[in-house]
Image (cartoon, rainbow, N blue to C red; front, side, top):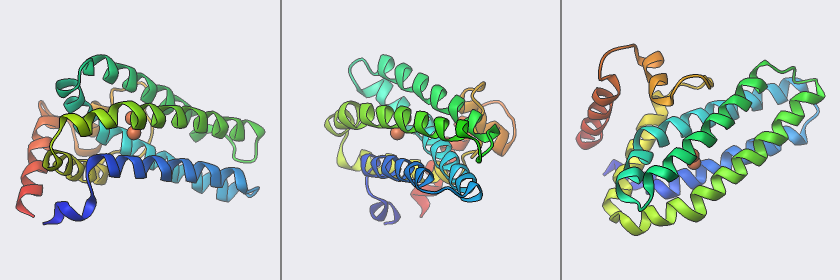
Length: 188
Ligand SMILES: [Fe+2]
Ligand SMILES: [Fe+2]
């Protein structure tokens, strides 16, 4: 089964967190503005894919299954918006400027805090309330969503709307996408 190789949703999202923070720390280790810019673009794309996948598939399950899930999701989405607003500033900053590194440091703080919230609070609750099979199924959906998610920050739009920019507008597009993805996963 294709789903078994990817790991469960908690493993996938936790690995993403480590990789995003590692990319940001690599920016701090180089003085070369070209390298800083390409690492910043890479981390921006990773954060966007990760956040959109969480909001599309993981947060709705948290809302439904976890005690106080709706409040936790509201808090998490708010933090995603803050992170995206900082990514947007980084997109427009000059990699040779001191301000660029201030934004990188700010992002490390924001992401570290957000990842810690998820890993110490919400992910253990997901493990407690979902079966191993459901966790793996959610992992497959997250991997699929990441392949089609937008890679640029748009802090003014809800992340569910961002997929419309990638795959075109249409009523119920996100629902249809979700159906298409679950069909595709079942058929592989
Ligand atoms: Fe998140
Ligand atoms: Fe996350």
